[in-house]
Length: 91
Image 1 (tube, one colour):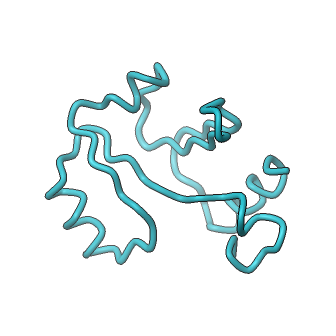
Image 2: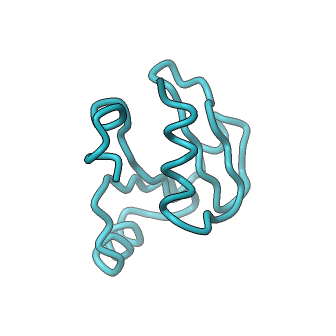
Image 3: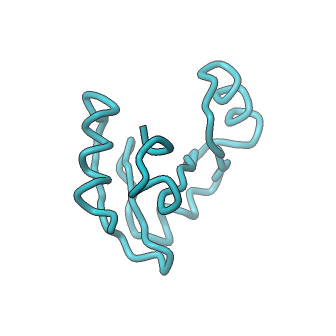
């Protein structure tokens, strides 16, 4: 969806941080679920520490400076829900 949207495709980059997960766990998760974006292992949860934010799961949209634009705790009902949030937030 994002890659097909001219307003978003060059402004959004997806990655997942596996808080508490090592590299092997992330590789297995990526293979099983065929994730098309980068998965970053974070065995010591330094990402959550840096943001002072530890709920799980959490979706965080950061701008290039690291400012939090969206923080959504829990899962989304659909990809369309995430897409709508991106469209409202990313300029």
